[in-house]
Image (cartoon, rainbow, N blue to C red; front, side, top):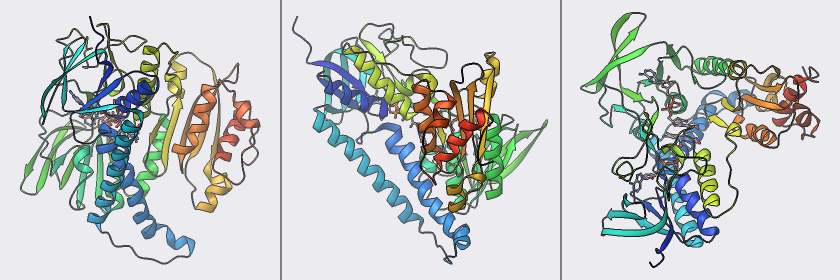
Length: 465
Ligand code: FAD
Ligand code: NAI
């Protein structure tokens, strides 16, 4: 039998798929990456991480001019040019997706445009504008990602009743916006439109915002967003919603009663589901769990030899960097190396202002595992750089094993928490103790000094509080 022309065919070019393809090519595997959309980069680059952050950054400038500059002695007024803001976001996306094309060329990853379907364990059928093509390969890596979850009784119309993709492109600032779900998407995109002038109300079924994250930090974030004008209704369920003319009628159940409310745009942000439509995975013998996630072993191999899966389409947090690390680990193991993902050290960030970032265990999770922890906290109110910036809210919280002092988790609410969490994620990867971080020299005056002080506070010897 002749060798198949490809060592690896990756289906999907999101952060999981494209990074896996590049790493595989670096390791000498002849690799193709199949993507059904004309632009590479998947959810993350096209309709996720990047456009949302571009709008968060733009709307933050707008907000700062209106609310924060005066305190710095700068009098300025701001007028919104939404079309330009959206066009800038599109340019950022376009530049980055073109960048992935360049990386594919540089690394000799073959890009195949069309919808991929597993015809058999060694064959991917691709249907695209140029017709049908069969790719024979030794291995297949499924990296087909996820799509938004729909709610029964709520039909998305892409205009007034929307999910995240359309909330990145609203043609005008809605006067009243309701958001179902106080998760990352609800709070980030809710923040964008609130900063641009919308009255935003978030409807959440649980009794807290960002339910998977540290409870105390989530409560502080909620308070902070409320101060900015965002409204929260917790413990409520949306039964149905329908468009009436240019408005949306939302049926909300709260404390045993149901009533109809009106808004101009309803954003449904209640999670994402693994995406395996048209893939032929099940037919090829790949096993899916009750949530539709592809089941894999520790090598990311499905129960069908030669078919692997990574990223949002398998279990675990739906995060771009988790997908990337899995892609790298999967192909490194295919090539005989020792790929590994330290799942306990995967950071998670909500890019509101202040930002909420976490890594490792929460207090609740530590208690569930019967772990005794020492906790150190330090408020940004007492950090010189934060005060110079005009930032007073939030804190760094570090959880360390009470017996060994090893860092088990960290939760930061505050300015640039997304950047600050990296130090603690790295410390956890290295098995560092709170003492290790506390004794490391941190430049002054910087926000990371708050991390050092929280590490000192674990041993009850913070210096500046
Ligand atoms: P995806 O990025 O979903 O890529 C899958 C790709 O596969 C897609 O391009 C799809 O078209 C393609 N595909 C699917 N089926 C086929 C097929 N049969 N044939 C060919 N191609 C196919 N995560 C973060 O870590 N940080 C953030 O700040 C962040 N912000 C987000 C903001 C929003 C609004 C959203 C929606 C998500 C955000 N995420 C964020 C989540 C992040 O986008 C995902 O976790 C990440 O994109 C998952 O990567 P993936 O490679 O598994 O899949
Ligand atoms: P999510 O799972 O983060 O949050 C969904 C929220 O909706 C939860 O709080 C849940 O309790 C609530 N909810 C579910 N059903 C509901 C209902 N019927 N009524 C009211 N509330 C309901 O999902 P989200 O925000 O849609 O994001 C999807 C995925 O994308 C997440 O897994 C997230 O990790 C990822 N993402 C990551 C970002 C980041 O890393 N900054 C940004 C945006 C998305």
